[in-house]
Every structure is written in structure tokens, then in C-alpha cells.
Length: 96
Image (cartoon, rainbow, N blue to C red; front, side, top):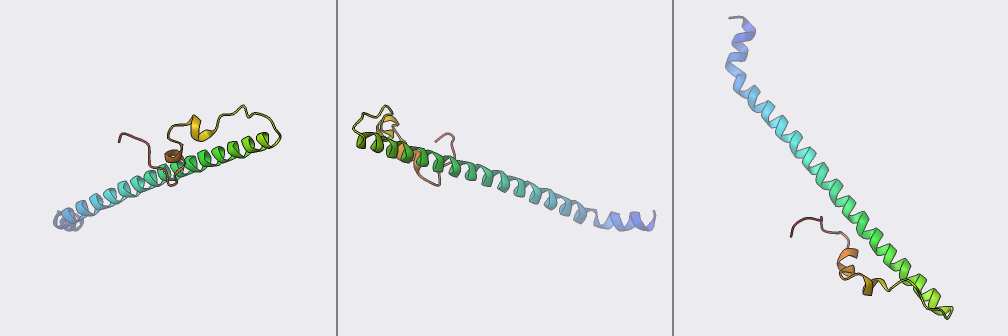
């Protein structure tokens, strides 16, 4: 046995534990990044829905002020769960 083999033979368990912890930490970082991206995307969608609904309401009020009938329906009447969709942060979609 060489000197390197003797050194590795006595400490191989610690090296294996260290490698396992590095792999586990990497998996945790990747999972956290994935979760963060999903949450950011859901928040962006919530803001977009809220902005769009607000813009439709403004346009409807402008059309009514001009004395005409708006062709676009009121968002709160057209979409059943609009207040839930416009809430930010938006819950991540999936089974409830």
C-alpha cells in the first residue's frame, strides 16, 4: 500500500459524507431557484391580470362618458374569480 492509499483508506467515509453533503446542497439550491422562478412568474401574471382588468374598466368609463355603450364586458362580471386572480402574490397553480 502506498502512502496515499493508506491516507484514503482511513478517511474515505469522511470524503463520501462530504461529497454527499455537496450534492445535497446543490439539489437544495436548484430547488430553491426553481421555486423562486415559479413564484416570480405567478406574481407577474397576477400583476398583468390586475393591470388589464383596470385598463378595461378605464376604457369602459371613457366610452360611457362619451355617451356610447361599451362592447367589452365588465371584467368583474365576465370573469368569475377575478378578485382571486388579481391578488398578488398569486398562489402557484396546481392541485388544491
